[in-house]
Image (cartoon, rainbow, N blue to C red):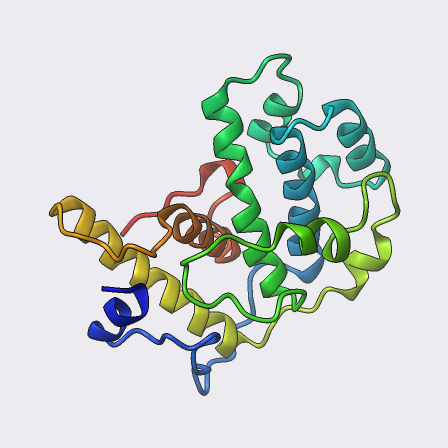
Length: 206
């Protein structure tokens, strides 16, 4: 069974972007600037997890005035002289959360079902300002998607996460093309967007 077939059995939308939730107008608790800055921070942290030297990344985030938004956990990682493979792997997967945040501010067209990783080429070459460059224009251009659109994708991600978590608990088979880490990072990003938890403290309960 594919993820698309599996989702359909639970009445979960399989469209690239699920239908908007009508008559919902509660704004996202996070501002466009906060979301855009978090995406830039994640980009830098992920780059270090892939082997980029941390010093230029730290200097860049400081020069651009967003170092204060770097989480304690991220600061510790950026200053860690010899991070372990498990730690690096965990931070690398945050590129999927970064992709989700970029969708939230209109930089990515659609998320679709969590069956494949993000387009890393676009992240590096098109979407995020290059390391060392000015980010003011990028921050200013961010626009949070309409509330009904945000809620629809948030709900879909949550529904998929709950179904996936239940299946794992009961040792049931999951779709072969479902990427658990992609789904987890999307859920992580939406939990942060909901505004109740700081980045390091996010929990993806189901």
